[in-house]
Image 1 (cartoon, rainbow, N blue to C red):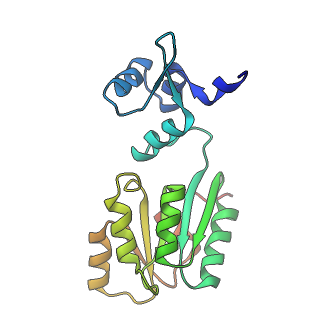
Image 2 (cartoon, helix red, strand yellow):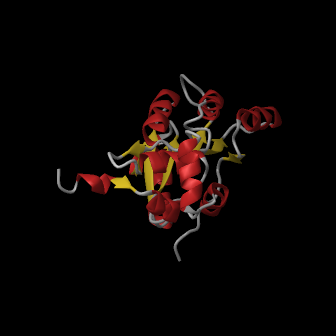
Amino acid sequence: MAGEHTNYLTPTEVAGLLLVSPITVRQWAQKGLLEAQTTAGGHRRFTIEEVERFARERGIALPNSQRQVLVVDDDRQLNSYLVALLQTSVEDIQVFSAADGFEAGRMVQEHKPEIVLLDIMMPGMNGVDVCRSIKADPATRHAQVVAMTGHHSAELEHRVLEAGASVLLKKPFSRDDVLRECGLSALD
């Protein structure tokens, strides 16, 4: 039993992470927005996972937390390049990759990334459908989707943006284009 309480946070600790007052944290708990456990003494305690979920769904970056990015492209060479680019160019980042839309859906549910770098033209489930799926789910709609294509058209760009992507990058694109559109700063 000793040390078990370390997985739980007090309202004051949660408030420090989210940069709000402890009263705000208690109000969120009362409203059911932030799930809390109640101790035998009647005090609220929050799991780290619940605080991370709450912050992720509201686009709040927690201090000292790694940003999670999912790269989705069926071109294995480009996929590997983008993973390596992000891992070597950006501090405090965790990068996952998927090679098709179905795998992307599974990875999005599992990791709840902040950013999805998403190829549009893939076999099976295309990127427009993947984007719609991400944006339709309350648990993942916070994710920024940066779409990519080698077959750009105004009609495709309209469909992608309508599905919820923030931008459609035209292949080939530069390293700086990727980092800028993902809102990531490169290491010097």
